Image 1 (cartoon, rainbow, N blue to C red):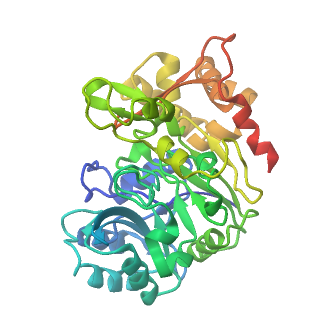
Image 2: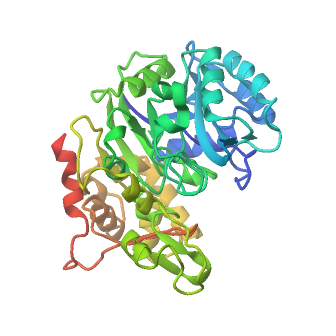
Length: 419
């Protein structure tokens, strides 16, 4: 049984999040996408935790279900703390097996921050202490540094992070078995750090609206009769089981809003080499540049680009179907025409991930607009043009419609053949 899992999402109780991030709408969109396992998100928020207990049906010791989509209990917390006179801001995803464990954790966590204020609470708690608390409640848990390279709120963030897992988590660093790549990085960037070879890289949407579910996800192969998905998924991640962890589904990292360096106010976007030339200073206004993910990777890397470790789990870059439709039909991503076409395809043909990754070109052409099919195939072949994001500004990935255009990054797509 193939499991497509998005394990890091948010609820309507998180800041800057759609009111449609409720259980029923989340499940509705998960089905359109082809996602069959979700992280609950935001279980630290009393309002959301109450809704989770109301709607989710326990189908095994540690796995829950609503209307055909399975759930495991996850949340994200924002750890803001001082250590050795320096301020750190690191976001972490936490996995717990059941509601009882969550209740114990929430009762402790409320001593370090206001759980009512945000679905992703800010807590004055060192990452070391966080792992200690989580493991004292149950060892059947997991702490995963979230969007590990985001400049402002992550373990490797250029503005408020650390240079290694060991530096961040100290005596509990051996408990960290996984990190989340985040929208601004992908596995090949993380492979440049030999210290991460034993770490399992996971990818999730961090969705703040239902439409963004699955923009990154994880694909597992699990026995059909296995009911306790939580225990199996945690085991796969902790053991970095390549036989059962098939691949991750990745945003093009250049589309992430902190991929390159820059200064948004001045519309300045720079590669790490260009930033070095300007000595980290905006060439327009003279203020400090926001250092992005690629620059930070360069500073910590001990390997050249395109290095692939032997035990790595593959990945596939995708562009969401809604964006492919909008570009193919020259309609806006949020227009009714685009949405109508998306709804037709995902309800009458197949779920989004089957469309993007599984169905042959011949199968797609039977029911889907030929221009959209052309876009899907071009994305599979990495025939795209890339405009990197920077300083909070999302990048843009555009399909190369010209048949004679250069095939961008085609060689990178062949890395899957190596596994």
